[in-house]
Image (cartoon, rainbow, N blue to C red; front, side, top):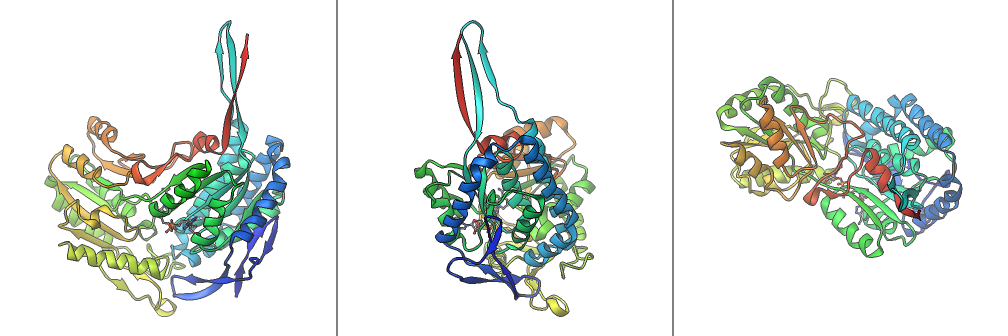
Length: 479
Ligand code: NAD
């Protein structure tokens, strides 16, 4: 059985205590590999390796850093098929989708390699009096922790800017989907990344993740995951005065105004509801529809969703694969039960389904559409993070904004309207870090990415990420 080992100082190693966790294939429910169950001793080894590599890496020539990070991108691209297959088996997502995400992981390295070459510092001149200039210096050894839904994409989204700015990294992928992070170590060695610059430790969040966050010498933590975990991490890191970036959960609205292009709104809403089995933090799980087109949208949406095929993620015909873990599968089904108790009417789906042949014991759930729920009920307030959406009618723009803003979250929102002024007016009023007008998941890596309220603190992407992974120092000269 494959052993998913730690990657420390350029070498694959078992955890010091030689303990192992089971790694499951969600499409058939079987254990197919073993994960190093690391603890604080492994974090210490990773920290020591990173700290040893730091003095050379931080002063490495920008062009050398650019070439190495670009080479990592090229190797990810060259291995796209193998990495996508590994991601699909580990996470349950369709392989065709994993291929796109692996491409995006390569883009992360390419984008931040280029950013390193373009990043510049400000100067402030007060004529005849003073010149101030800002040095943006690497921080040292930083920690990156990522979730299970877009495994390699979100892992590299943090690691690439951290490395581009001259830091050394101790990174921890999710214990639920560690495979592609494991494979990344070999790629980094092949690309010529100096040993110790990137170290990857595997294992449980409350054990090895906690050790990483608590390590006194790891000076910044970039975390993507659930809001409750983010709160816990902040409670440890804040009193230690660590720099902290938190990308957390969401309960995103998808607002359909009567003036929209209905066909486009329906087509994209199918994606924004059920892509990756609804396991994307940006999915629009609350669909709010202007009353005058409610029935029209509902009928067309149900018709489109009925066409989605679910099953073996390695079969390209399937648009949806398996739910990532048994625990998450049970959680999503429990929310469907809750919705029924809260008076929700299931319009489509609502059940788990049995896969064919080898996938008979996989964790599959039908795409589920629910209506008749108040916007204040738990189903409409709590993050489900699965293939479950609710439909809610509204009368006025004010009501749509009120319902949108009524949850503790504020990550992303889509709105559909052909009224230009309405689009900008509503975008301004929504409490959300990201607004998509007449689209969803259209990404430009230069834009600030992150949420408000309980969806997070800080922004990733573009210069925001480069600034997070550097410390600004003001140098003042009196003229
Ligand atoms: P999670 O919070 O359970 O785990 C995320 C990571 O944190 C994992 O690597 C886990 O091992 C680690 N972790 C858990 N407990 C820890 C602790 N005490 N100390 C340190 N590390 C710990 O989240 P998840 O279930 O893996 O991911 C799903 C969540 O992530 C959803 O809420 C989703 O919305 C969110 N998410 C947010 C974004 C975003 O950009 N805002 C993107 C993707 C996913």
